[in-house]
Length: 310
Image (cartoon, rainbow, N blue to C red):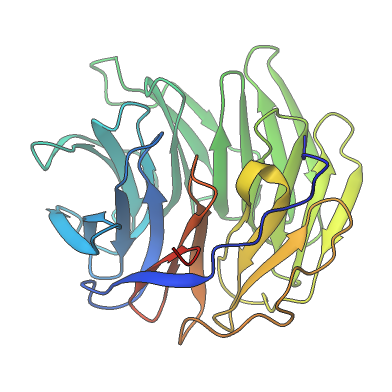
């Protein structure tokens, strides 16, 4: 799990500010692997592709009629999916800049979309309290399965080879084992805004709107650690692991980026961290391979790229 030498210092030096969105930015995702690109989605109904190194916008993807709330990038970076207020999921060809299909079926806005590892299956989670699974290889546009156990909006999803993890406003994290046909429901007790499993699948990071981020054992559901100090009571904010999963990172409603040691849950300095966005930080994501880079998106209309001082 975490290396014993302790967590790396979080990248806190502002490298670039990406500010072309008109209004709040709801999501920002890195391209897969070592690719140096990011995709952001916002209230202005656009998805934008950026070079975070240079701080330049490469392309704008326009088809959404409502705000963009979620993005997931394929393993080979040739396509991505996006969702939001449209009640449909949009599948995009990155190079052509157009949608290749639109998947309709949800009754309300789609809060979360996630592709599986080879981008053949897509999961979407909605305000309508369902998760829908779509086969992107099939010509049919209907979902292959509808998971309707949630009693309130589904806010967050994670998909891997055999499981789908869904976090809901109803206070549950539901883990669907597709191979065994089993469902496990873990009651957290507060609306869940993000779920992030460790790379080895043994632990799960869960953020809730009682200003807690909790680490659970995936097999037993046991609480392993509890990370606090941040302000998170109203919005969908996201927790993620830091580099090599030795730390936990969270951008909060005060515009601060918090970091904790994974093992002892101590706040990593500075404590409290400085305010780096003018409004709530809606998305926080560490670079998939680079130790020294992180991105944040905010309702202040900006995406910020953070690095270590060079």
